[in-house]
Structure formats: structure tokens, C-alpha cells
Length: 160
Image (cartoon, rainbow, N blue to C red):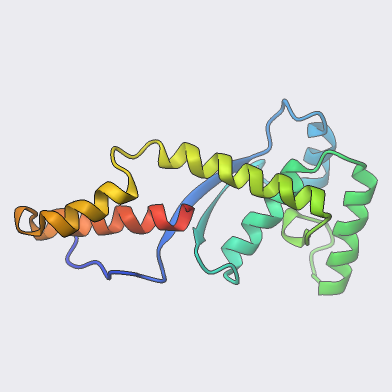
């Protein structure tokens, strides 16, 4: 790859997280029915800024994914929130799921921690090792190598 430039401390850094509702989920048939024609697997370009729409959608699908209680309660939450937002589409989707309960939000955060750890473990270096390379070996790096490290660091920082 050739990167012309990379902005250090870029507030636009993002990472693609993929969330799937698996057939092994005890509530899979009901969730699939609720999503109707929605894809049961989605990728979200998550940024550090939680007010961005992809991040809001990411959290909404995770709330739906980890929910394992009364599906009627979940359906009512979806419909109530959909009516509040006056969405022209009549079928509820994961986009309309606000925080449900403290218990469910804790499950969401645990799932994000699991996802993040799995992703971080795929990198050949840690964030600390990347920072050390930039600090201690700047003259040994080509401009392209430096930019690749900065890009990789930006992805890691989004997941931490």
C-alpha cells in the first residue's frame, strides 16, 4: 500500500466491526422474523465519536443481538421508538432500538469487549509496540511504513 499522508490523532479513524445474529441464538427465529428482510449480518464502520450514525446503528443491532428475554417487550420497544421517530417505513428494524435495560447494556459492552479483543489479537503488534517504533526508530522507517503504522494505530485506538 502507498499512503500519501496520514493525519496523526485523526478523529475520523474508524474500524469495521461485523455483527451477526447466529442461528444458534435461542431466539433466532423470532429475531429473524422481526428483522424481516434485513440482513442477519452487518458491518459497521465504527468511529470514536458515539454520535455518528454508524455507531448508533452498531449499538442498536448489538442491543438486539444480545437480548434474550421477552421478545414481546423488545417488539414493543421497537414499535414505540419507531412511532416516536415517525419513520415512514412500517416495519421495525434494529435501527430503532434504544437502550433497553442496564442488564442488556452490560451485555452489549461485554460483547464489544470480546469483539475488540478478537480484532486486536489479529494484529502482529500491540499499540504500545507501534508507538515505540515511531518514537525510537523514525529514521529507519520509510514514509509509507510510518503511515501504515499510524493507520494501524488509528484502527487500534478506535477499538480500545
